[in-house]
Length: 103
Image 1 (spheres, rainbow, N blue to C red):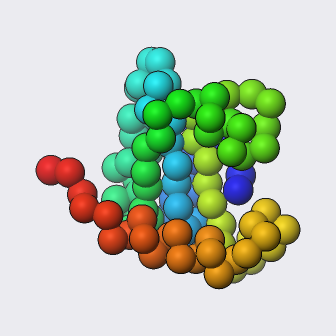
Image 2 (image 1 turned 30 degrees about the vertical axis):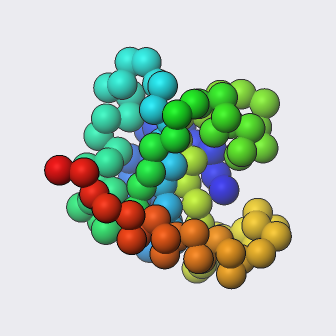
Image 3 (image 1 turned 90 degrees about the vertical axis):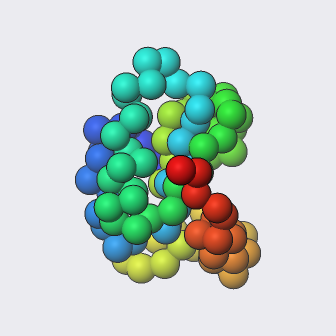
């Protein structure tokens, strides 16, 4: 998992290495990340919102609240040590892709 600045994330969903984008729902102002779902949809990268930037930061093993996390499960640049079980990570990616999209 890569906690990143939103400016870096703007180009990351276009990368074939990006498997999932996780966004915090309590970011203020929301304009900081509001363009990222559009970029993800254009690049067919699944994305999900979680409720808390603090919890997202903790899940990404950082001490700071985090607005966006990129998950790489395959390809160049993926860090196998990031997940103890890469098969489980790939399974999560597939489950997220199957989630219904809100209109």
